Length: 121
Image (tube, rainbow, N blue to C red; front, side):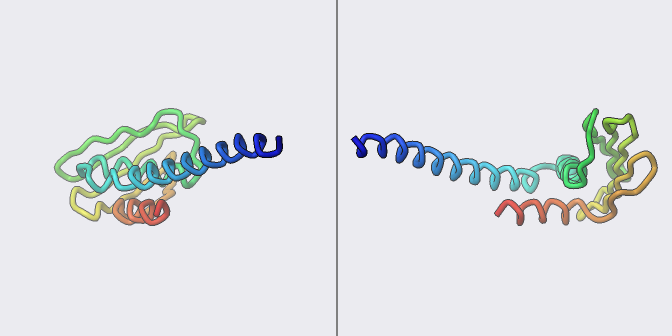
């Protein structure tokens, strides 16, 4: 009787272990996706990473557009403050993110994405 009770527990443990392994692999693959994307995708993903890391509540996710001088992304916080991100057109994509005119991030999109890849590994 004890043997029968252990088998379902062992099966659940195996399922949990398998699920954990699959989720870890998905996280690593997701982290690598920005590396293969185009420039505007890299900038957008870096903006999202910064906002999430800073705990910014997002009402409207920033959408990004490209121009000859670089990229501009615009969105809204949960309390209707403007999210504006501006990045250079050339790698490493110098990036400035402001919320309602206050700078919350200055750096490069490539550094943000590299940190995300390292954290996922």
